[in-house]
Length: 399
Image (cartoon, rainbow, N blue to C red; front, side, top):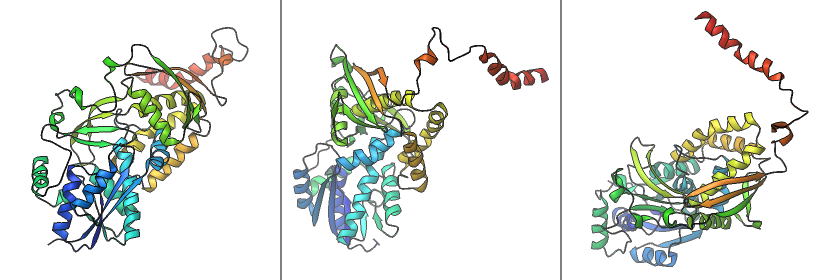
């Protein structure tokens, strides 16, 4: 027997899953459904999404531009940490989910809704990300996760349900990919990609040109940072969302940011995903280059030791957890002096650092030079080495 629900706020993308879910919620729970679509820079036809939601039975539709909040309050904080999951994934989907969930809860309170719902499957990470955020923000909210309840257990079954109910959806049997698109990235899963031996088809990519088709000459750019955040490209100041859009444009035309990985999901299985993250790839490369001259060695090494934990928390859905706030505060403190300019060359899928400068630089040419200097007595190194070797010598003497 389904739990009694009067009104539910659905995270609605207008894709196959959530289009079916909207109708299924109405039929299963005999409840009012409010559809909420977040504009995170995915270039969707939101007016069409609104019309389809109403046509499918939504009582009300919220469509909101959250791009500025997404980049300023989620993407930039993560990139101040150089966050990357398992060495490859720049967390595009993981960073978007807590923002969507946060706004869902706000709408639920505004509309006096007693439940929220999402289109994440029972096998994936997103169900965890959404629901940890829901419960961390509103402990008593009811949650409906259709993929854990219904018997529509495949993309084919969903498409059959949609066809029988006259619901227009974008997915087809020829291209049944599950995608997530926002201003940071676009991801592709499912279909031919489920076999990790299969190469991604050339026509799957949406944002970037193939590196083979990219310009034959490199393009040089400069990115200016202030306290760890990018503020200008080629001396042109840009607000956060426009900054990421510009870096996406630059990276996409040079084939930068494509990755094909098999990652470890939080729920315990491995998953193959293909991602395009052009602007994020440039941003992370530039940020790390500036940190190399502005961060103290021990601060840098300590922060770097925490990056895997930070990325794991984001990936697993703990954005609103107390340990996440603690880590973010630590990361932000390290960024006080990360101010300066980085020069890069973009060329056929590569992002190459060619220069970095900062008024807060700890790099001293007069200390590092191989020429004559008056600040470093090379003989001091002998005592330094012998002191560090003492325990090694004692260990060997016991052998």
